[in-house]
Length: 124
Image 1: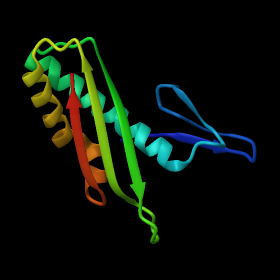
Image 2: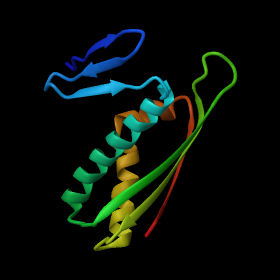
Image 3: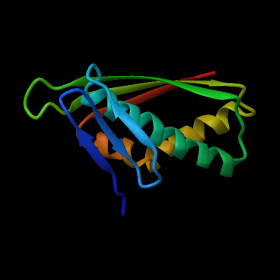
């Protein structure tokens, strides 16, 4: 079970994990900023675990994620594209395969794929 405690006032919002990690919710950031941010974190953690098992190394990964919302209610995502840049890959083909597997095992990616067309590209 996952347990998050959240509190909100007119000025600020915050949620805290069971491990005591606090995340402030900013006025100028919208719900989809947090959703796409959560996608990036979940997908990276899933990818990192798979890459380690596949014994492929890299220096760093960056993601640029663009999502488009539907205009009709509820305004779920209609499309989401991830541009991945991998630096210092020990084996580009293995790293690409690890990322492809991550898109199949990442729970947030999977959840979003139920309402949005998900696409991705990777460059080195």
